[in-house]
Length: 464
Image (cartoon, rainbow, N blue to C red; front, side, top):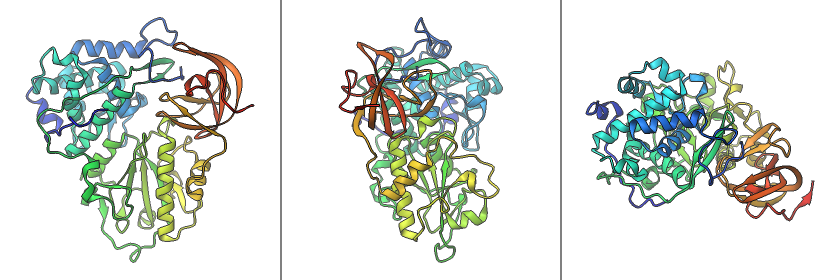
């Protein structure tokens, strides 16, 4: 994606700006959205179409935004950890109240915006259109996805404009790469394209990656974005308190939102690190010497380092191989630094903290794989490496789309194939194959060979 034109945006909150305006076989190409039987738009697709038409916002912008903030999961109307609601993650927390703004703009109640998917999408479209109007985007310009960078960056109302850029950049990454996923049997996504977003006149706000003078002292590969000082306890660990645990969490929200929430003085929570799903990027927010407020147990807070992973516990697609490997390298570094055994007594989930009321990292977190990475320093798994070109491909228990989903590959990546076998015939575009590859990594299971570069006619591996 072209990034040289990405200019910064002003530090304006959402409410202030809006006041001026009243198949489980996912892929990166092909049809952007359809019903589950392929005969026409499904219910969710229709909701995006209607909201896009009513507020004159490109449909693909809305879809890519939803994929960025929630992976198009409504979560039954329950709030995320940072109090974001619905497919479009409308916030209602002490930092921002985009939910109330959406209610004012659409005339829908806050309850409807929380519980009804179509209304939630409409609320997001209304907010984006209000930002576009405040920026005086002309009607002809509104048809161009490249003109929506500033409205997207302002959408969540993040106080730190660098974090706002982080979310907008992620939306444009999806617009460029394209993706498709399955939501309740309906395939939906966007086609890939070239993007060149227009960022307006605000060129002086850096991205997180530009903050090279503020990288982590504790873990050099990490970026340094401090949590608000009221959200953690200053200390002099390990002199004041021994460090003997690493606690694994999920953010229950997206990466940018989690970072912004830990910067919010009203949140009263913090973690030492936040990791991004797509590529494993690491942001440190609390120094090792200080006590993060993450475990819900003061004794464990004083003795542990908390790692937040961009994910929702009920969706395995967030747990990418890139994030597993990045997190494992960080955990191994912490264990080596403080001489911790690399075992499950000292590397635990939030749900394993005494008195825990949380379930993260949840049933889809692959502890066996993670611990093998922590102990093996990234040893290559068994099998022959091949490149998967598609996004969000589900890994199945067997070579049929009727079998259980056991994992999700997230972004295009390298997988390791043990063997291949015949199974359900799958067609994608002009390619058809009845061959399925059995993966040893990142998740054990099967994917159709049509999603492996050059794999439709067979791979150079044994028959299962």
